[in-house]
Length: 222
View (tube, rainbow, N blue to C red):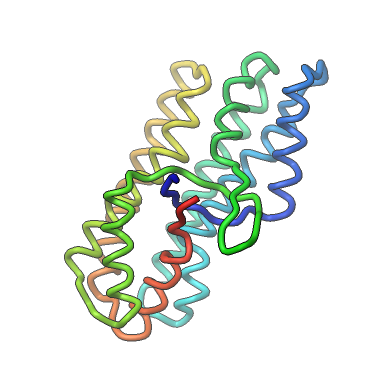
């Protein structure tokens, strides 16, 4: 059994990523860069929606909704621009290692009696348990702000490593592209830390419960 952070992929992402992987498996000679850009941008948008924008909907009218929405917009703009700039110019051979990365992140999992396609990354069991424990406290309305902040900061670093750093490590970037990627990653890290420090310690009552229940639903073992 493996402990994951996992969220259900949209039908569009599930279908397009499966098509992309099939093309690489059968050695298609047709250029895959356009489809790859589409799949990568869908991945990026759904990750940002899951980690940030869906919380805006859950916390509509809350004190930190605007911060989350603004930060999410910056991430989408930065990452989607980088994806189009870099992947749109690559050959199939250059893109092949990244197709393997997408296969790792897009997995079909079965739990609670249902099987679906998910976007995932594996988490160390001990941290998975630690995060679950503090989220379960929050879901009961029990505030443990220091532990929740510490766990969510570590979680965000894991997510950024899994979804940003590891994807970039699979492709060859020129000097300018590498610098753009480094600046983008640094900005996302800094923004994530700032948003966490200014919002999580202030979660209370129903806001805390909704926040905790939301992330609990994406901690799975399969």
